[in-house]
Image (cartoon, rainbow over all chains, first blue to last red; front, side, top):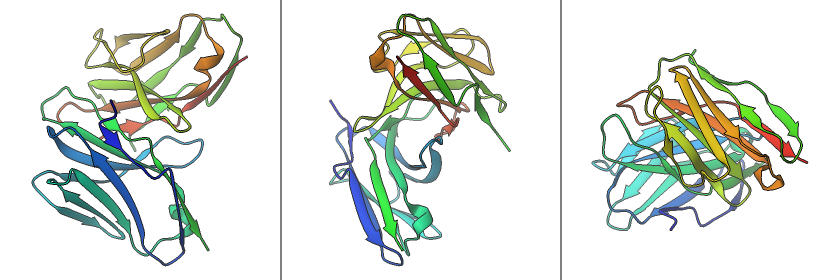
Length: 114
Length: 112
C-alpha cells in the first residue's frame, strides 16, 4: 500500500515559469513532510520541509503548501531554472521522538527547458 | 561539512557472489538507513538501524542483511547476489530527534 503518492512521473516547464510538483498521502498520522531533490548519480539532498501545524513554508524560490484536509502537498518553484532539472521526492513521517523513518513517494522528474 | 560516504560509486559483481556495501558517516548520527532506487519504484527501504548493533527490516529486506558494529558504519550485505538486485543503493543517516536524512552519493551495483 503506497502511503505517499506522486502521480506525475515527469513534468516539463520553460525556464522562468512556475513548476508545481504534487504529492498526496493516505496516512492521516503523518505530521511532517519533506521534499528532496536528486540529480543522476548523486544522493538525494534535502530541499524544504513543512510541519502539519503550518500550511505554507517558503525558502527563496521554493514554497511548499500543505492541505491537510485533502492530504495533499505541493512544491512550487518560481522562477524555474535549468539547474532545477532533477528528480523530486516527496517524503512523510509521523510522530517525533528518536526513532522513525521517512516514507518516500516514487518521485517526479522535472525538466526545465531553456 | 557533514558527510555520508559510500565506499564505491560503481560495482559490478557476478551472480551468486557475496557483496558488501559500506557506508560511513562522520556526524555521530544514531540512525542509519539503506535504500534502493529503481526507475518507477522510487526509494524503497531495505534495512535501518536505530543504534549500534540494532537493526530493523524495512519494506524489502529479502536477500539482504546488515551489520552495525560501530556507530559510524552501516554495512549492507547481499548474501548471494542476483540480477534483480541490480540497482542504485543509497545510504542515509539521521540524528535522533531530527527529521531529515543526509544521504550518501550512492552505489550503482550491477549484477551480471
